[in-house]
Length: 255
Ligand code: MN
Image (cartoon, rainbow, N blue to C red):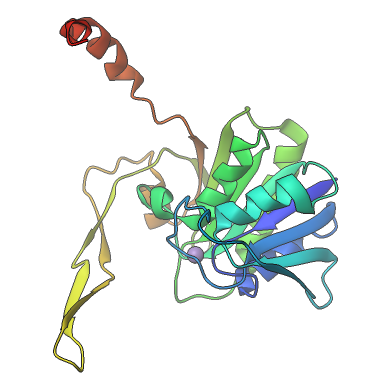
């Protein structure tokens, strides 16, 4: 069984190593990951320059690995189309350093790597440790192994990935959640460079909105639960699709 691993923190990130260690007995591991950190690159792909790659020795891990000078989506695409000897049974992205909650999933390279999996018709998981300061991936790696085992046993609906966030504190349990709302405040630092020119540096602190219900990923992590959110790619707003079809009939007279 071939399992493909990727991430957005780069091939040398400790979270990826911890993930590979926890899964290496489950199957034949292939790692295709960016050669440097590519967090917050979303689902970008590289089409205006060539992609270069090199094989990487993962030092003691039973895995074949390549570092690619592209995005997480590039990595999964390239792996599936050319590098792997056959289609993987599963794509696992992570373990990301930092949470991927609510609206974060649109910016996240980790989730995008998993999305590239489902675009290719493959079951996929994205897993994140909900902290930037804690570098102990032991528990998140255990969670990954358990969820991977269940995914292989039960399968996932076609076109659905699981976005998993693991709290730093001892988890109180597991919740299946929906995506919550997350907004950032104080996003831009406005500064002056040594030549007197203004520049902006995007940062910001998450402002967890009050309307996050108990069934959201944001709230689950806040209450120290492991959060698992099924995510699909289809962004169509089905609620308003019929409304537009009925109430915008004039659109037909434009042409
Ligand atoms: Mn990251």
